Structures are given as C-alpha cells and as structure tokens.
Image 1 (cartoon, rainbow, N blue to C red):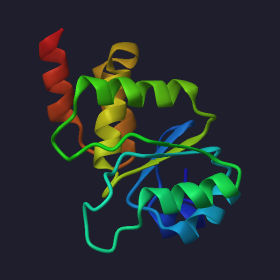
Image 2 (cartoon, rainbow, N blue to C red; image 1 turned 45 degrees about the horizontal axis):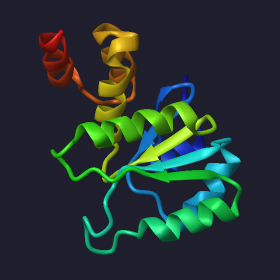
Image 3 (cartoon, one colour; image 1 turned 90 degrees about the horizontal axis):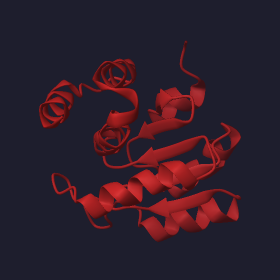
Length: 148
C-alpha cells in the first residue's frame, strides 16, 4: 500500500487500520488530519519536552473545533507507569476510530500500543504491524514474552 500525500508530508505511520502514529503534529495539521478521515487525536507527549513544541491545549482546541475527539496521556520518555498504560488502553478502547496518536517521534505511541495490545495480539503480530510502520519493537516484545 503506497503512502498518501498526507502520510508522506506528516510522516503518518499506520499500525492498524484504526491506529496510526506520527511525530509531533502542529495546529495547522488538524484540518489535514480531518480530511484524511481520522476521528480522534491522542497525544502522548508532555508539554515542554522540546523548545518550540506546540502545547497540547492548542492542538486540542483546534481538533475539538474541527469535530475530533482528543485525549492527552502524556508519557515522559522512559517512564511508563501502569496508570498511564491503563489510560492509554482506555483511550484506544473508547475513542472514535481511526485514531491518530502522536509524540516526539511516534516511537512512544508505538511502544504504548505494543504493550497494551500484546496479550490480545501476541508478539508476532505486534512485530509485524510495527515493522511495517518502520518501528523495531523486538526488544520490547522479548521483554513482554519473558514476563509471561
């Protein structure tokens, strides 16, 4: 499947039909997100992580004005808590689909998705889906498999 113009301009990386990840989006990207058919935006990036990064509230206001559902589950890189994983899982289950999730590079969102969907999908499916999107979750999947 080839990338759409929006995917190539914004670096959108579909993990499943209903869940796509991307690096940081801008307020001005929201209209294109709507045009691409997304119904929700899930932000996994804390405010102030990088200089010049748009605040979540600004992106959320634009998204809500455009009719999208929005949710903020900020994860400090390398500091995933069980509460944050539970919030992320709830967002995946409750938000209208398809969902566009973003963080600094898309990796954090991919890791969260992998952890929360591991029991349902298994390691092989997680690795296939994330590899097709350009993310290597082999180390994470190995850790999850050791915990079983």
